[in-house]
Length: 445
Image (cartoon, rainbow, N blue to C red):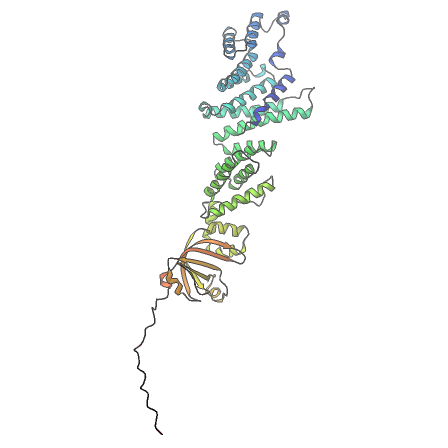
C-alpha cells in the first residue's frame, strides 16, 4: 500500500484541537483546581504531570511518565498521561507501545470524549500500519485487534459532531481522510488473516472514496484472485485498472497479471494470454467500471469447451464469446488422428510438406467441399508429398493458428498416419530392348 494517507494525521489533530480536546486546552490552572471543594487532582500531582508533559527528550519523558503512573496510579489526569505516552512512543517509532497506550486510553471509556477516543483509534491505526512488518503484529490476536480497533474507529468517526466554527465541507473532507486510514488498516489486517471477502469490502470502500487509487485497485485485485473460488474476471480487471492508473512498478504488475491469467486458465498458447492482457488494459483505459460483458474464462470453462467436440468448428466459425473460449481451449493442443480430405496437391518446401485439406462434420459435407478449411504443415515426413488430391487421410498435429473469415485452421508439427500414405512405387521398370527390324533393300525396278 502507498502511504499517502499518512499525511492526513494533521487533519485529525486539527479536528481534536478545533473541538477543544487537546491536552493543553483542557487543563485548569492549579489555583482553579484548588478552589473546588473536591479538586480532581492535587497541585503536586498536576506539577508532576506538567513536568513530564514539558520534557523534550523522549526517553527522559517516558521515564517521568512512568514515575507519575507509579506515584499516582489512579490519577484523573491519566487520559493526558496516556496521550503523552503514545505520542512519545510514536516519535520513538516504538509502534507496539503506541498501540498499548492507545488501547489504555480507549479502555477509559466514558472518561474521555468522542474526539479523544477517535484520536486514540487513529494513532493506533497509524502505528499498526507503520509497524506491521514487525512479526509481533502479524499474530492472529494482533491482527484481530487491529481490525476491531479500525472498525470501532469508523463508528467513533460517525459519532463525531462538527464544531460550530468549522465549515461542513471542510469537516467532511477531514473525516474522509480519517476514514481512508481506518479502512486501509481493516483491509490489510483482513488480508493477512486470509479473510479475503472482508478485505475486498474495505478496499471497495477505499475506492468509493478515491476511484483513482491505483494501489487499492491492485490490492483488491490480489484478494479477488485469492478467494475460493477465485474471482478471476474481477481480479484481472482491478489489476488492469492499477496498471492504467500508473501504479509504481507497473511493469512488474503487468507481468503478475499475465502470470495470474496463465495460472487461472492453464492455456497452451502464450500469445493468447498476451492478447487478453492487452484487451484488459485497453478496456481499463476507457472505462472506470468493469464492463458488464467482460468475462475471462477459467480453466474449467476451457475444459468444458474442449469436451464439446461436436461444437469445435461451429463455435470457431461463429466467433463471439463462444468462439473466443473455444480458441483459448484449443490453441496449442495436439490432436490425434484428425480425418480430412486433401483438396490440392501437396506443396513441398525443403523438408516441409504443406497440405490444404477440409474437415467437416459428416462424410457428405467432406465430399461436397470445394475449398480447404485447414492448412497442415508436415515436417520430417517427406513421403507425404506422394498424397494426391481427394485422398482421405488422418493426421496428428498441433493447432497453432486460426482465422474466422475466411475460416482457416493452421496446424503445425503434423504427421500423417502411416497407414494412409500411398506406397512408394519406385522408379518405372524398363522392358527388354527390342532390336529394330533390318531394313530391306529397296526393290529393284
